[in-house]
Length: 103
Image (cartoon, rainbow, N blue to C red; front, top):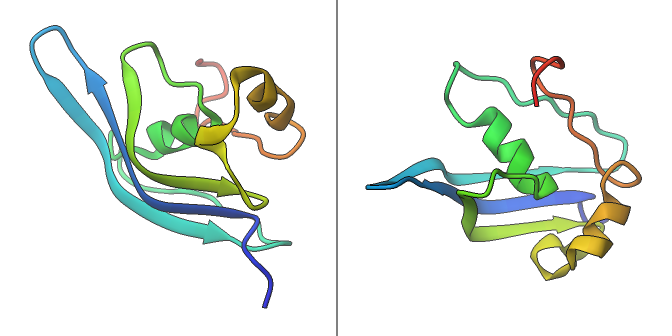
């Protein structure tokens, strides 16, 4: 059995606002095996885009991954520098937003 290409475990992402903190993703886990194509679906505001932005490390300045792990091809993405992450985006992982005219 081979390791998944992408493994997200217990992902937790929050946004720090002026007077409060909003938890946008709380405990999301899934994996993608080689050859699979995965779509994340759900109601508006449920955290689909934030999950994708967390994986890609393209959250706005007030957004932070505060828990969990994201492993891509055996590497923990949190351990990569921004320069290394730029090489990963597009070559190894990509995000197609639900509304391609935004972001």
